[in-house]
Length: 322
Image 1: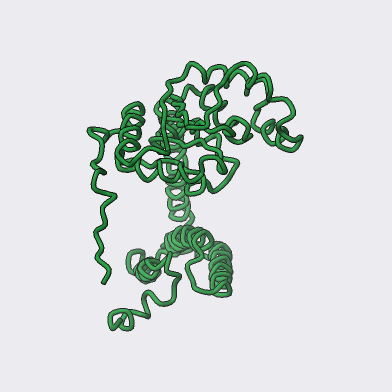
Image 2: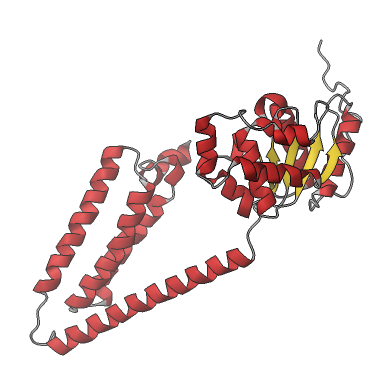
């Protein structure tokens, strides 16, 4: 507490998510003070460097909003913008006589413009390289994606995520934890998922978002593992052919926005028949469930799936109440 009070002038003015911005503000002030020392009497270079320093500061301030109050953030952005306008106007008032002749100004501006062009080209090249690399080698952020019906297997999906996370160092996707925007749900399945786990409850195939996830996984060649639960009703032709009328017009329009229609759903469900299948008995004891989860982890090739965890003693009480 004493440490916080002592350095309140450095950290207390900013939001807790941006506590480190005090260091940036100090560095910006130091660099501004050093500009006349590094470029003594060279007005053009001073103007260019000050503008170069204020532009990223304005962008970071507008993006992070580091101050505690919205008024302070808005005022800081306005001050940054006003100072940039002043610098822009001061550029036309730089002396052009004596040591600041036209050739000197022309050389300084030429070097500055060349540096900006090179920076833009290098940035575009790095961005293009990154895009191509991610297209060839997509980053699998999630070791497994849990496709489930919330009412039929919501609690089981939570339990599976907790247990499967013990077998891998990567994240296991559960929509209630990891989904921030529905618009990127199918893109997450397509490009950021290593395995799709379909928790086969009786209602999972009737949920529109689950259908879209399965279609995306099948079309993107993401490995799909069907986990048959106790109430799994199968995937015969009557189930695939009986999809008409189970979704409302709004739900069909929501899927159509992602280029998914009922015909693609039927094709994906037929392809799901040939996917690898495992059974999971949620009424089994802890040892039996852990063995099933270990088999699921092995089927997904999770990095740490070497041996099932020992849960034989989990049912014993460890707390003595007097």
